[in-house]
Length: 183
Length: 154
Image (tube, rainbow over all chains, first blue to last red; front, side, top):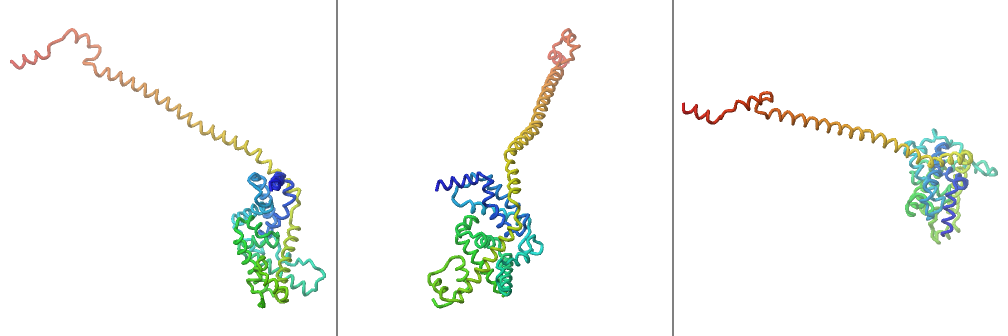
């Protein structure tokens, strides 16, 4: 345990390694949350800078990823509130093209009907995620995009595990409802 | 368990909350299995879509690291800047204090001079006759009480 904490602390001391290991995740989470590549880049940079500056406060009671995500969650919340923009409700004005990302289907071997259905489902999930509350969206993205477990999400968001479950449950209900409507 | 999973139970299943009976039912029920598979496939598509989008939009790491590193040097310079700002503030704050002390000193000197002048004036006013007439008073001195008695007798 002590060795793990010392290793974690040394990882944080090396900003280059920290950025190299976690940049993609932090940027992806910020992009999925804000839907703006410029804002996501700023948030990711601020996240690593804050993490580096406050590295002495890291006690190793959670993983570095959870710690970084916690900083990112706070930054994203502050950013969205400061700008007073509701990115997810303004798909047309956002930098990420919702139509384009909904068209992304990896399996080329699928039939045209299956691909069309998958596209509809994908668009429905994107739209449903856009309609979620800030907390629901955060836990939804951390769980189903970043593959974090409930305890990690609790550590990253500062919520209790039960609260995480509740937000996740409501988010899933909303997504399922939207998928059902799209069919 | 023979009943299909309810909408709530499907969402709970996706969170990871499931009973052994539900697991057994899903293994046997193609309808519930298909519903769960459909939801899992939609979420997997979403995950892939976000990752694909992020991969396209992501900035190249080296430039980002460089910019972060350039900001990282900030804190070393920052204390110096704060120290200079604090010193400037101290100087600015000291000027009025110094001026105030000088003003007080000047006012004290003026007050002392005024007091001296007043004492001199008091001394002049308290004389019975002006200073040039004082020799005459010494020469012509009379008994004021006896003069009054004589006036009363008359």
